[in-house]
Amino acid sequence: MSDTMNIEDYLAQGGVLSSPANVPPRYRGELLRLMATFVDSELAGSAGFADTINDAPGIKQRIAAARIVLEKTDHAERVLNVMGTFGADTARYAVHHPWAARVARDADLGATRQGGDMRLSVFHYPLQGWVDAVVMNVLMGRAVGIQLAEFSQVSYAPLAEVFREIAPREARHAELGQEGLIRIVSTEDGRKAAQASVDFWKPRVAASFGQAGSARFETLKRFGLRRRTNEALLADWTAEVDAMLSTLRPN
Image 1 (cartoon, rainbow, N blue to C red):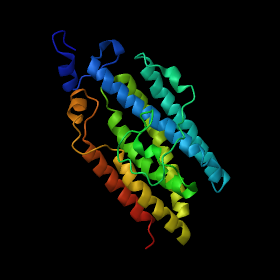
Image 2 (cartoon, rainbow, N blue to C red):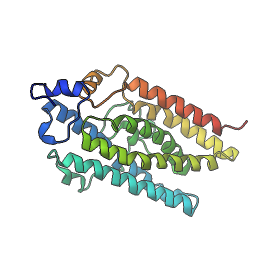
Image 3 (spheres, rainbow, N blue to C red):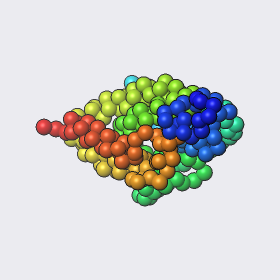
Image 4 (cartoon, rainbow, N blue to C red):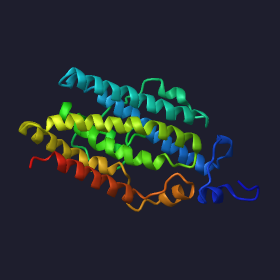
């Protein structure tokens, strides 16, 4: 970076930062918000999915569910370690927090944050059995893949590297979910149960991309923390999910 170039101009032109010492205050705040949202969503998602392990119909499915729970918790820790370099109180994540707490199934949260953490709103809804958990994992797994492709390019290099390391494992979680969903929809009863869960989860996962016309997007783009709009990411997810679900419908 040039000695005479403003840091925000440097970031706006595609610059990359690598140390907490170099970041401007507003950038720091937005970066910590992004990391907290990811960490809290991973911890909440892991806690919710842990409750469904014993609902799995077989040993292989239990192993897959346990792997997802373990790795999501590990991913949260990796990003939390980056937060710690900014002086974040990482110890508060080690004490009791109701990560498994959920609202009523029929609540309508939209994209609104709830409670005392930064999880995405979709992780406030309860899972109802194995089929429901698999469907949610498939739909949210696709969303995470699209979001991580975006986050893997953030202008804070240590965080971008962590997201790039995490992305293949999160992609595998979605693949495990899809393998389970293929088995579920092989029967008529399974298809009906899966469709009911798709109808429930699809709009709630869509809300996790944030509101259209976000007032914060231009700031995030200027800081190199976002590249594509919420609408563009949502459109990619919708197309991807619709194409995937169409292959599971009987001819």
